Image (cartoon, rainbow, N blue to C red):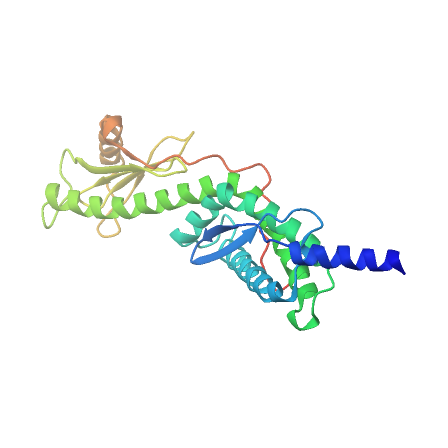
Length: 267
């Protein structure tokens, strides 16, 4: 009987002595949550007054991780908002320490006999699944973020070339251009695949592909040039200074085998 009382008092003392560690804040995207580094095997001794606090913190972390997974699920070929690329990039530095602490917390919570109304077993189960998926997502980020940034840079470059091509055409070409004896290139561009186009005022193009000789392409309106005159277009394109050809930015090489993106959902 005395031994039982000593054990009961010891347990009761542990409950009274429980002091939660300080919080650390995690901000990712539009979500903010707090987490703590609990000492091993201490969380189950938290008193009833602390359980609502704990539930609030676990719920906020689960919501943050769910939003992170949802916002970064598109994969390299998907459509990405700039803020989601930034969120994935930031997660590489900020998220892993939080995941380590949060996973340790959840592994304690799932074994504690807390009040049923707070639904801690379900919170822990969902949280551990979010942690698992988030670790995969962060591991993918090292390859994925450079690809996404290069994709955005290329899209911006292409949009700028459309504007510049129109501007150069207005500067160099007459309102109603006609084929002349010595047609001049007014704009030349090489895309990310190496496809090159030299543009002439009369709508004629010379196009080149890597490993192939450039070819004459007739204007959409008007008659194609004669064979002899086509050679003049080809020669003038060849004479165009290489330094003045606008070249697409070269992005990072894609990984040999990219992992399939994982879509977050209610686990």
